[in-house]
Length: 285
Image (cartoon, rainbow, N blue to C red; front, side):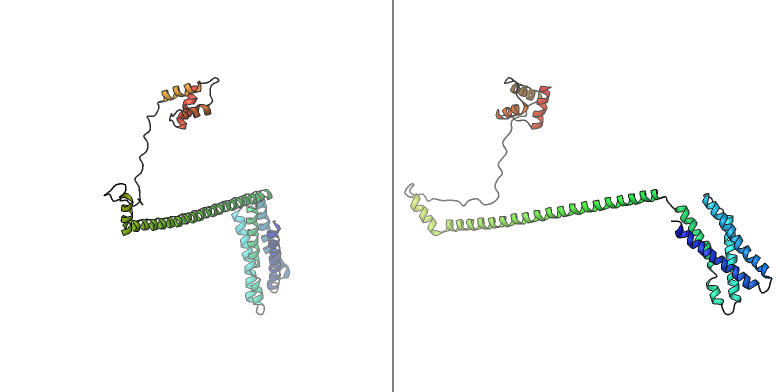
């Protein structure tokens, strides 16, 4: 994985060093002896390589020196300055030399990126754990979305069924009301008709002379609720325990709870299932 960042940095460094040495030899070689120009070029490249090697050694130890970094960037700027100065003095190829003058700074930037890559690199095991956690989170989110979607569809189906059933009930009630209204209207017409009184008189006159039968229309509308039957006083816990014990031991062997409960209800006694079971537990204990 380090090759993705270290190979471009090495290649850029090599190219920038060759360009720096070539420029120094061409630029200073005409004014000073070539060994001097070679020494200057190698000095710039050597200083750059020395600071770079020291930076890599510190990085391998997990350390960092701002002074060494500053010196390295200084050599890089010097190399860039040499290239820029040569480009400005060149008349015919100034544009070409300016186009490559940024290579030393670019090489230093690539080594900076490589250092950041190394400081943030993770082991394959850690990367696998991170991928597992992310996949688990995605799975949980997908399951939660599917559950919510299923619940929403279920609720939608239930509401649709309730709405359809309610509409059906409303239509039945409307038809029933219309039928009752028609029947009531028919009865009222028959009651108020002229022939109804004569017919009833001809029937009832033979039974009770001088009496004209009268009949009322059936009631159609709200009715008075029937009052609830009065319940007897509730048994106390002691009385309930005594009654349960008496019914339980009415036969030999003693009755089970189901048999005792059935005989208790059949005898006309009243008690909630919770109180009856609690009394059974107290008696049996």
